[in-house]
Length: 250
Length: 280
Image 1 (spheres, rainbow over the protein chains, first blue to last red):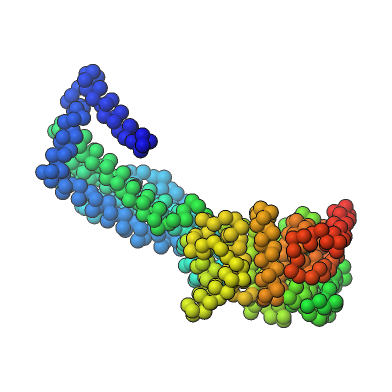
Image 2 (image 1 turned 135 degrees about the horizontal axis):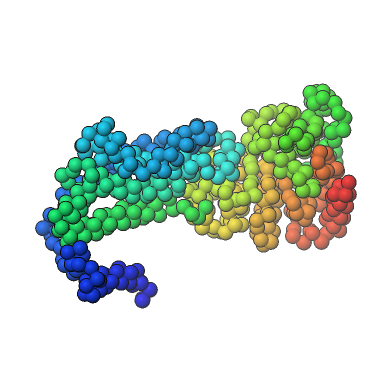
């Protein structure tokens, strides 16, 4: 009974620390509003609907980027992974761009796509796609040799070995990639909304509130962004548990 | 079943003739199912098999036993087509491997089953992929369930089963397609004693019911002798045949057969040959 409530302890401690910082005058109220005020503002922006267009814009950009990343990354990763030579030949390029912070490429993408919505989606899908591709490729490459041999011995065709065994084997690793990729897409979308002239989105709202010292709204937008990231991660975790039921067990 | 002349292995490794010559000149003995001729295999330039010849009798269980590193599994895997050979020819009733239906039971049952399919679908998988109609698949799996007297729920996923149950499912899946030859790579090494006794009994029943030629690699002398009609003893590398030991105790053999005088004699003799080969 008491164990069930343990996960609530952390957030409550954080709120208490937050309040303590204000009550003890460690931080100026102009930099940090009281938690009660912030949470009240959070409720208000949702009841009035003021934050919904920004939330919708960010969610749309994140999911659109993610969809593009999956549509390109999964098939490409599976194809590269099924031929180790092919993967090795492009491994350096993938690892290089995977290690490059995608935000460093924003100016480059601005040259190509201009200051548009497409730019934000393009840069986010690029960053997310590399993660999807890399994980799908490794999922296929790390397929259990015994399973592949078992299918080959049964005399099934090469296509069916690929479809029934290699592809299924890669799914667990692919889902790990999908989860990281959607988080990455959100990070890049938020950064892009802050720094690529934007009229909407949570990133835009955060930077706008900061410029006019509307700290209550800034913290609110940060909390909503965090909740969005957490929610997306949770959705993928639950989907993975349901769809890839054997993950980690076999 | 008890053809006295079925010991038909020809140890021609020492002839030193080019392999194509022996392919032509060594006809298989009567009752032979699988013929291995002029088999050569080297690892890193060190020969493991050189011009190796072997006949496997039809409808019998042959155990392969020998010192560590002599290539027991390699020999079986070359016959099963999992490991490429450097030279030589392996025929099943004169057919190539491609024209032959074989089954294989892996040591690591956990890695051999498809965890995204239920145990039932695992068994049915090779049948469905072979184009069998749904009703026939159902009938075939039902027959295997009856033969193996399965009492656990086959709708569960492999990772929900015990090790012994998983290996049973593996054996059922490998027998589903009615293979001509069934290969078993140390099928008991990851099982506890109780499950070993169970699977031994089931393998014997399946063998009596189907007459499938079986090849078993084992590192356990008792396992190797218990199931076998013939124990193929190998030497250290470069590997030759040390001896083929016949073991004709009638089937089905009960677990108590390990105390039978004939079993004890064959096991002692096998051990003596094994030790002799260890020390040469």
